[in-house]
Image (cartoon, rainbow, N blue to C red; front, side, top):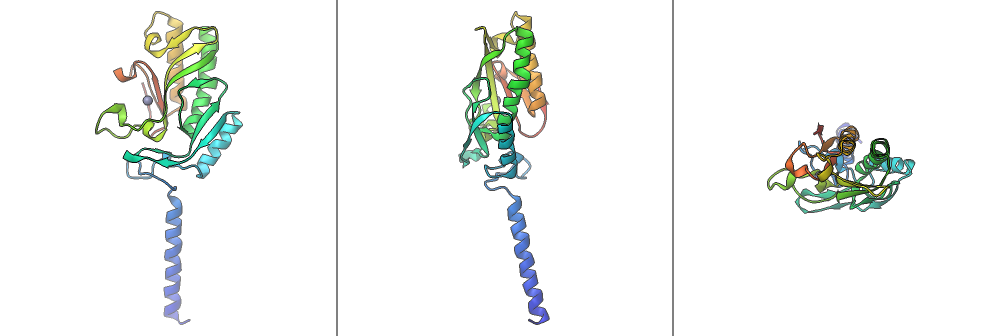
Length: 224
Ligand SMILES: [Zn+2]
């Protein structure tokens, strides 16, 4: 092979290598993030970070099943998600959740909600009521707003708790209700959620959140 041919072959090989590396850098099924970068939350079911997360869920003794990846219309997607089956406390209304969201939710229930309920209300939580996880809609349901983290199965809305002794605690009635211990419990659950999720919103964030606590693992940090 003469010098020119060898040089051309090397250039071709280099080009192939570069395109393979570039292709390998973008997770399959990646969707653009807010700054045009692939969003961290676009990790799919086979991404190493998703596999790591599922191992962590299992390590936390959480029972779950894997949800198949799907890209929906309007930019919504369910990628690298799981369906929680047993985290030790039944939670009603949970749908598909991105694995990292599910992991943090299970830890929030175990490490924040249950200890706070025992300490402040004198009874563990027997059941958690949620308004769900995945929903393909813009932020706050406003037309033209950016996609809600719910559209990526990356958010959960918690509406209330049933205690083992039968009492019911709802965000709507309890947040500014007469029982100071309930008010403290709900604020502890909210503030504790802010340390485990990236965004935590409750009744003091806006009127749309008067009846639930919203937690998500989107970009940015916000706690109100
Ligand atoms: Zn929400």
